[in-house]
Length: 196
Image 1 (tube, rainbow, N blue to C red):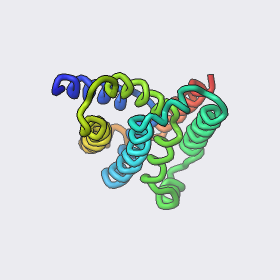
Image 2: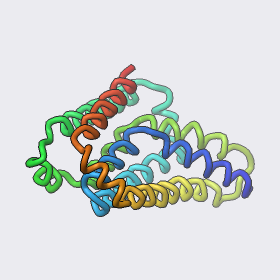
Image 3: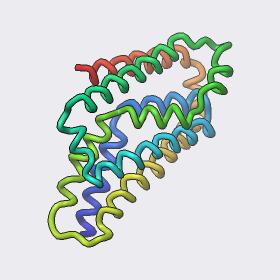
Image 4: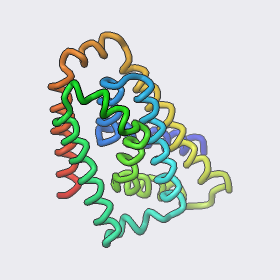
């Protein structure tokens, strides 16, 4: 069972930290807005992970994976949110940045980015299902849930902390506007990928 838990943990790390909306938004926020904003965003993302992990382990993710109107609605909402974030990055001027930061909480941006990404739930459902089959002890589903949430919390906090290295931050500050445009284009690409 320890081997299975380690395999599950490795799959989760690879899945959660592959490039996607959460990684992109968190990286940009941690670089542009600093440690506190980055950690608040991590808490928002992990709150979303709690929701998705609970649904996946409880078996509710089957509804989403079968498609239908609920799945389609989540996809459109997620794409719209990513486009909205991208537009915000393009429109944001240096004088607006401080005002925008105080208006929209990093926690809420992280939460909505994670919650509105239907691929997170589909990924969890597909990865969790094989680990729930067979004869398992009562604590097994809780251990899987704890791995999903615990790894998310630990590794996202570590990522934000690493992005605070002075050389990385100063490089971002010098190329911030260009990087924001690149981040915006990547968000548009992710939205398009969701819709296709």
